[in-house]
Image (cartoon, rainbow, N blue to C red; front, top):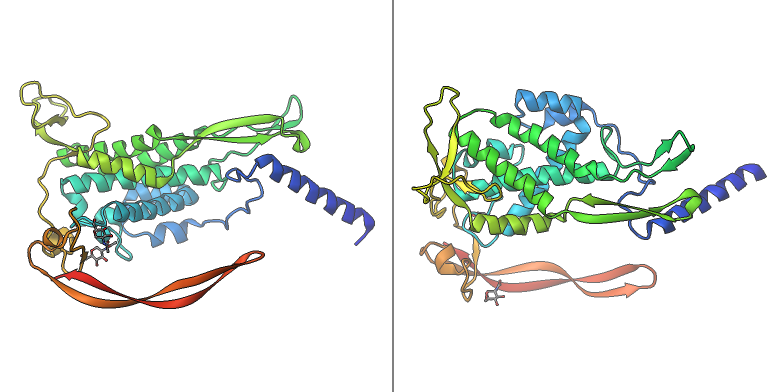
Amino acid sequence: MTVMTSWILLWLCLAALMTHRCNGGNDVLGLDIPTEPNLDPNTVCKTYPDLTAKQYSLCSRYPDVTASAIQGIQVAIHECQRQFKTHRWNCSALERKNKNPHSSPFLARGYKETAFAYAILAAGVVTQVARACSLGKLESCGCQPVLNHATNQWQWKGCDHNVEFGNAFGRKFLDSEDRAKDFMSKVNRHNNKVGRMTVFENLRKMCKRHGMSGSCEMKTCWRAAPQFHVVGEVLKQKYLQASKVQMINTNSASGRVRLRLVYKKKRRKRPSKSSLVFYETSPNFCEDSSWLDSPGTRGRYCNKTSTDIDNCETLCCGRGYNTLKVTRVERCNCRFHWCCYVVCKKCLISDWVTVCK
Ligand SMILES: *[C@@H]1O[C@H](CO)[C@@H](O)[C@H](O)[C@H]1NC(C)=O
Ligand SMILES: *[C@@H]1O[C@H](CO)[C@@H](O)[C@H](O)[C@H]1NC(C)=O
């Protein structure tokens, strides 16, 4: 290696260090993130089951964005399980291998839980697409600095559009399968929108310092999608306060369907734009019912002493429970070694658990 190349390398390293310091630990917009391998439409669109024709064509045009959307759906299902882990309906049925959660018979119902599922899946898509955008991983959306031709300097443009982009894509991707004018589609679109809005209602502010050759004299801030567990918690509250709606028939030739709250008979109020809506009373979710894609509560862990809904009486629907001893492996006696790793032992831990009959 010539002296010249080593100097160039050294200079590049210093530049990288400067940029890093400029970021102030905030690496969300890191420019040094390697670009993802090119996502090919065939691998993305053909492996995800049950895409509608419209979703498929959207996927063919934007395979990278669609891959993030699908990832968002996975994130949403996990958060849904977290939010409902003590409920009889625990959201696990939406996570079937090689199944599209939107084709689950459960999502063809009108329960409160269905409303929650639509909303959180829609919110997951917005969040994950927005995140991928602000990481600069999407061809059609990113937050890179742009060259200002007047001054010939790189300028940071921020990336306030990242959530807008996620929102627009999410709307195209999920509402497209529900364009129909019937009541059920209208309810689903409403709940999708509540999910997307929940992301907007909880945006966080992110900032990045930058400047010419690491001078850091400029600061650009933008709004970013919230941590997803925040969205999950807000939507759980909305689930608890969901409004029951009914269809009112309009005689108009347009065939438009309107949603009206069930209780407000006199004034036929519209449901609020930010509340989840449902139109069917939930079953008790006690028994396995395949037509509903709901496994029932046999085999669920319950809590003998809890006064909440996970107590054995409630969770097991009065069928009683078995007490079993289970052994699990855990990491224990962990020790921190300088620098920087942790060594743990494996311990066998035995617990008595109560399991629904
Ligand atoms: C949800 O319930 C099913 C069966 O009722 C059970 O197999 C599954 O482990 C539960 N999921 C979680 C996350 O607790
Ligand atoms: C059961 O519920 C009690 C009371 O809420 C709680 O203190 C305890 O940690 C729970 N046990 C388990 C195993 O979750």
